[in-house]
Length: 225
Image (cartoon, rainbow, N blue to C red; front, side, top):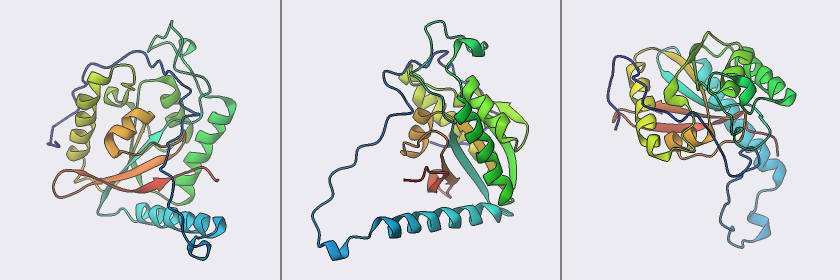
């Protein structure tokens, strides 16, 4: 349920993200497609071209955000490993799973993808996890604002509904401010808000509808197949 609030009031959040499996290796499973005539099945090239066209159309829409508010839910860049060490401390990056060099370059490239298309980013919010903050900082799109509601709730699922509602409420308070808000967070948070499981370094674009619900408009920065 989305309602307007004057400012985010962070719910208690987990200070540890211990994943049972490598979140960079997890993939969604799709049901087997029914057998069809081979002549009706698009080839890989046409499917990739269609996906590219859809992504570029979404970029073009964001670039024209002069009277609309869009939110980009961005999963942090590549951070190899599983969860965080047992000694995890929120304010000590040396105790956390952090971006690899490939992840840092990915974050830089992500920022360039926004700049090269003149996307009018008005605000960048981030989870307090170091890999999210570093992703946001390396993108270099706007001053980075830590937002505890974006912290991972993977290990503390009871917090999930409250944090998801808090993010939705915050988006509602910004709905009259045209432009693009970037929120750098974790897979579990993005899935809670959109129902989509994005790879590291990719994003889901959402917008508040007239009923106060988030509509998913599409995905950006998806890895090439």
